Each structure stands twice: as C-alpha cells, then as structure tokens.
Image (tube, rainbow over all chains, first blue to last red; front, top):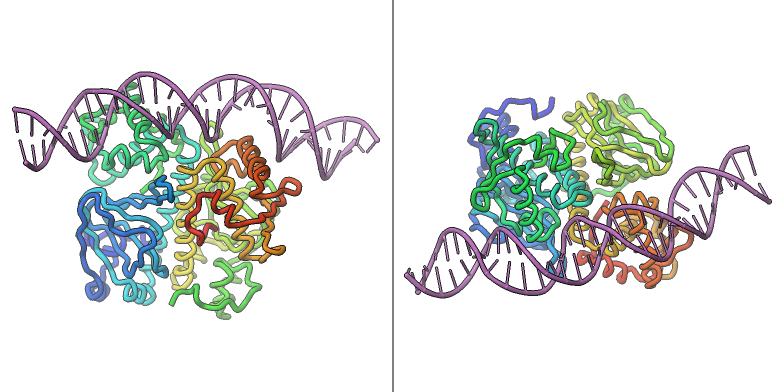
Length: 248
Length: 248
DNA sequence: TGGCAGCCTTGATGCAGATCAATCGTGGAA
DNA sequence: TTCCACGATTGATCTGCATCAAGGCTGCCA
C-alpha cells in the first residue's frame, strides 16, 4: 500500500512537487494538467538568497537543479544550517505563511514553484500528495534527528567523517561513482558552510579534514574532490553504528 | 482550510491517533467506530523502555498520559535525546517496520496503540488523517530544527534557559499557571535527562541552573519546581529572537 | 602580467565545558 | 530511627575547540 513500493515510470518529472521515484508512478494525466495551471519556474545564482526567514511565502516549491541550504541565524550572527535541499526536495509548508528559515542557493539553482492556495486545494482533492509529503517529511525528520546526535555528541573529527560519509552515500545512490572499490565525492560546500552545518568553526573543519587526510581516511585533490579508499573505515571514524543511515 | 482552524469539540479524545485540538473537530462517528476496532492500551512504569531502537514495530501509538523520550545512543554510550513525547504526541511511522530510536517512559505512561496495518488502511481511506499527521510531522520537524540551532550554536547557559523557556511556554499553553505575572513550571526531567537533551553533561546542567538561580533569572524550590519572575528576561538569556517559537 | 579577492591552511593562545572526585540531601526500606 | 540509594551540587583540573592572527593558493579582471 505504501507509495514507496510503486515503481517509478517517469524519470523526467524533476519538476513535480514530490520526489521522482514516487510521484512518477502517479503521474496521471489529469493531475499533471492541474499542476501545469499553478506552477512556474525561477532561477537563482550561486550565493543568492532565495527566501529570507520571516518573509511572506505565497508558494511552495521544489528544487529542480542545484543545491540550496536552510539556515537559522541568531541576532549576534551565529549561524546553524538546518537542512540541505537537493534536486527534488520540497520547500515551504502548506498551512503556514511565513518562512521559518533563510533559504540560500549554494550553487546556481532552479526552483519549480506552486502558488500556495491552489496547491493546498490540489492537496485536499488528491490524497496521495499529502501521503507522499508525509513520507518525505518523516524522512527529513529522521535526518534532522540523526543530525541532532551529531551536533550534540560527536567530536569534530567524527562530525567531518559523518558529513563526508553522508554526502558519499547520497552521491553513490545517485551516480554510483566508484573506481575499483574507491568512492569518489565532490563536496558541494565551502569550509564555512560545512562549519555552519556541523556546529564548528571553519578553522576546525579545515584542521580535521587535514587530519583525516594525513591519517589516510580520505584523500584530497584540490579543495573539493575527495576519494575514500575504505568506506567502512570512514564510517568507523564517523562513530556510526547504523550502516543504513538515510540522511537526506 | 487548515485543520488547525477548526474548533475542538471533544476535549475527551485523548486517545485519538492525532492531537486533540484537531482530531476532535473531525470525530465523525464512523471513524471513531473504525478506530475502536484496531486500538488497544498499554501502560508503562517510569523508567521503563517502551521501544528499543531496531525493534520490530507492528503498531503506531499516541501518548495518552505521561511523558516519554526519544533517544539515540552510540556504541560507546554517548546519548542524545532527539524528542520529547507529551500527551497526544504520536509515535511510529506508517510505512516503516523498525523503530529508529529508543522510546523510554520518563513518568508513568499510558499509550494508545493502533495495529499498523489497519491504521495504514484507515489512513488511505480517510485522507484528513494523513493531512493531520503531515501537519504534526512538520511541527516536529520545525522543533527538531530549532533544536539543531540550540545544539550547534548555543552556550550551556543559553541551552538551559531555552529548555526552561520551552517547557514553560508549553505548560503555560496547557494550564495557564501564573501567579501575579510569575510563571511556574515543574521540570519533567532529571538533570541527566536534561543533559542528554541539551548535549551537555549533568554537572554542567547543574552548574548553569545554579548560575541562573544566583542571577535571579529563575528561582528553585526543591529540584524540580521553578518559578520565572520575568519571562522576557529568560528569553533574552536563551538567545531567542523568535518569541513565537513553537517547540513541542 | 600583476594584483586582488575569496577561500583555505596552519600556528599560537585562551576558555567553556568535560572529566574526575568528594559531599550533600532526601525519601524509602529495614 | 538508621541506613542506603539516588540524584544533585560543588570543586579542581584537563582538553577540545574557538579565537586571533598570519600567510598561501587559485582564478579572475585590469
């Protein structure tokens, strides 16, 4: 009965309000037609702020291409990233008008936006959209809680290892990039952004990356390109028992 | 259109799978009748573990009375609380069989359980349940993200102040306990549990509580009973800009 | 071709909170 | 009533990360 179990049929639906694998199975023509009525696209440049916390939001949206971040900021400037938006991720919430976080484009980003009111109407008349959104939100909640363990209890080294492992795992799921057992990743974040994500300073991030490199856990080419000779070793460094962690 | 807006009509529905204020407005007789078929109650004593992480879960449940916690534990014993379950809060997730966290009773707890399969069926045939669950999950996600800011960026003192403020706010929303402008709260957690929630050690929790007391931000009677002479002052100490924080 | 801006690295030092340890207070059982 | 267990408090010391500071590297623009 779960939507997860249905096979995806339309790989190309990157602009649906809900993630490919599930929505595609449900892309009945009439639903798509209705969506067409209420959606539009917007592009943002790398570094641009897409939404300011506290802004009025009269739309919900889905990331088509690029990477965006959700961050919270305290008055004195302390920042904490609370989420990473990847293609097909959803932003905004039905039933609320004000944005709760800053949303910033980390790379160039294309968003597919849906006017809120018609989207809400669509949701009430199309029950499986609510179910799919519920599933996605539960996944995000799990990710957030995994992150709470990281923020509250892990050391700086473990935090870095965890971040690399998570990005690698996600990348692997998408592109299956492997060179004879090695795993290859491009970090989509600057040191400062990683610091904001991990609850560290950028100097500590830099030091710990250097340390992991020195110890042979990862190797670097340039600033961003990482290869992981032994993924299990990395997981050990991350203090991860769950080998099936599903951080988004 | 949001379920939030509907007035609560049945205060007594503490055992519904979804929160009072919203579900009561929707307690159509047939739905309740169907729920009756698939639900049962369980009690747990203070300190008892309700669910172990990794356990098979063939039910979802809602807290009727008492307080339970969600925690994650690393192999070496480091613990992080990732959620607090209060009466009417929901546990478990449709579409997943294994528990992701330990659930522990902090006080004596009564849970109302629903067998998973029939509940899922009910959900697909009763769209507003999925919508309501979505709403609740989004609230929890917001709470988790607020907590990420706390864990990643706040000082020990701010963490304690935030915790007290959150509990006070929630309490106030429920009981409106006020004595001439003062706010009165009972902390439902031991120092160690607070430490697990805040990503601190119990010693640091104790010291910071003493410090806040010394500085007149709060006053204590016994170990648990707190009065807050000036709530705005407390919020300031918490580093909270948002005065409308909606942490569960 | 040089210079500058953005990002990163590395070093020196300081401090918040962890760790280790001793003591206190309270409530329940013998 | 005493004793004990459990939680809380408080002190002394240690340490991991923040902070402050000084370059280094790379790519872009003049």
